[in-house]
Length: 224
Image (cartoon, rainbow, N blue to C red):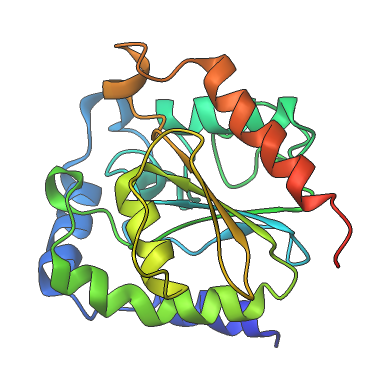
């Protein structure tokens, strides 16, 4: 069993945070009306993608009726629609849609994950929940030994990445801001593709494309 396989097993079986366990499982029983005939995953969500990836995408946490329903990160909600369309255009995904575990989506040279593995109430994990989940993220990055670029979706993802990689002081978050990590990857910031950002056009598809175009460019640079 590989390190990523062991990590997936441990993540899916985790029950460390009582508030998150109660919420994710309650949502899976009560369901959203439009999904009432569908089974919900209702467990923590492991990362997904190419184990040899040079580009990692780091988000906040699973959506209650997205990944918490489908069982795959950024799958089954509008944030995921935006993300995977951009990754498809960048040549990192074989299709622009991510709707279910068995939809045939494959990533090439990319891995997608979240700093917190369970869907939180109000999409806002508590600091203690973030800290409890941090060892999983540490194991994930340790196993993804080729990663040279981390796309940080939103401030929460950026904070998790800078904490993990020991970036001090932390440069101010901003769309397309790049933060080289001494002895590690380059962090690229992006506004999160949440409806709050996409509906208001704070984030547009060309803006997200620019992030992934830059990520691919950096990943293809020869190692000095």
